[in-house]
Image (cartoon, rainbow, N blue to C red):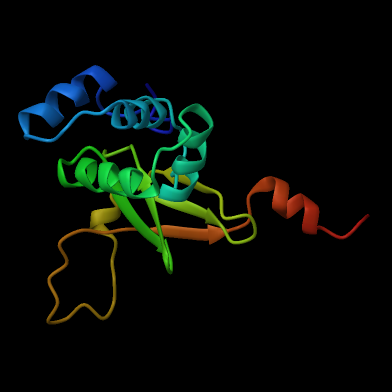
Length: 152
């Protein structure tokens, strides 16, 4: 797999079921649905977005269940929680070391890899000891950039 290939959920839904039970967490049909939805997800969904997807397949699932499941998965190291847009959390099934590009027009978020990002020369870090580096490149995705270009 190339470094830029999409990474699916780290573990299969059945493996997550076993991991949840091992932690003493309930495995409900709602949680199993969320495991399946996340496993094939190539984006960085919000809880609300996953709730909408899950509701189509399982009417009556609660937003609270979605949040609790996502937070449990994050606590287990199965998801990264991203706070790239103020007031919105996104959940990233790619737990490998990577960074993000964000379209400032449509909000699309994609994984990018910045070789040797941990070795970037940064000015102003005296008396500060970074634990990790998170790079977010803001700009326009191609469809948004094309839509905003003047007619030629």
